[in-house]
Length: 145
Image 1 (cartoon, one colour):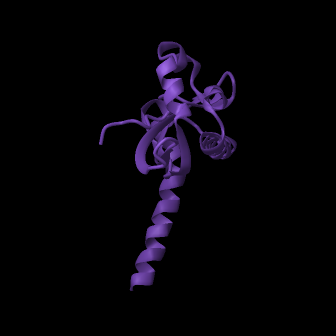
Image 2 (cartoon, rainbow, N blue to C red; image 1 turned 90 degrees about the vertical axis):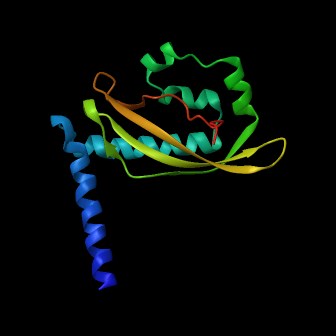
């Protein structure tokens, strides 16, 4: 019985992941879905191993213009190391955007203390550039608990 429930649950997740991209009447092709997954893998890796300047190309230019990165944010990012990054499944959002939450393990370089932060991402398709962009900025690794 338990095994049957697990199989049904996996089938439900598979069906919902396909239907995620049919939301809001926007036609998202298989190629676009694959490109989103590839972009997210690269973003995760860049956040984990790169630096702040490596993350900027993933940001939506409109958001980046409205919310420029401050010197304080730069110095804060230099004080931490990302020990782990695990994104969840993509979920449909209004306007053809896709959201997902992620669990980020952050280590303070000075204290070597590790903490876990939950962040939310919003991805939007840029039809002109034919690529996915992180539409809500860099993760807030210093959010209050």
